[in-house]
Amino acid sequence: MERNIKHRLFAGTVIFGMTLIPLSLLAADTEIEQIMKDRFEKFEQMGEAYDEINREVELKNPDYALIKKHAIQIEVWANEGLQWFPVGSGPESGIKTSTKAEVWSKPAKFRALQDEFIIEARELKTISISGPLEKLSAQFKKTGEVCSECHELYRKKASLFSIFGN
Image (cartoon, rainbow, N blue to C red; front, top):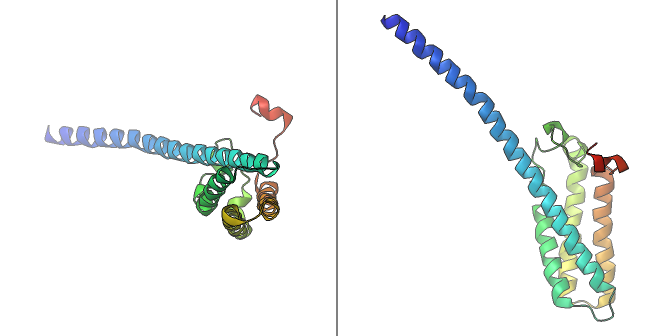
């Protein structure tokens, strides 16, 4: 009888343990999904900030306080950028993403571009505080060129079919 109880306890423990494994995998998927969602949202916000600066630098009398606010935030995001791409948060996760696998398979180039972006974003912030509009406009363009290069190398191009979830 004691042996039967031990077998039941053992079997119950094994079954309970087996149910925890998929739950832990689900939690990991949920964590990765959240990381990817946060990354997407931050890039959306950065794009909005960049668009705001773009609108302002095209005006004769731009709102320098608004430009400075967005330039400061872009620099913060630039410094956080590498943290937005932890291992496991790319296409291998099985979750739809526009990020190419090269971010993780060729990290040196990605890191170099990120470092360049940090430098350009810092300079944009500095000029937004004290620089003339011509200098600000030129630095804004340089910062955008680094963004574009990274997008070209590390972001999948959207297709017409992507609106249908393909």
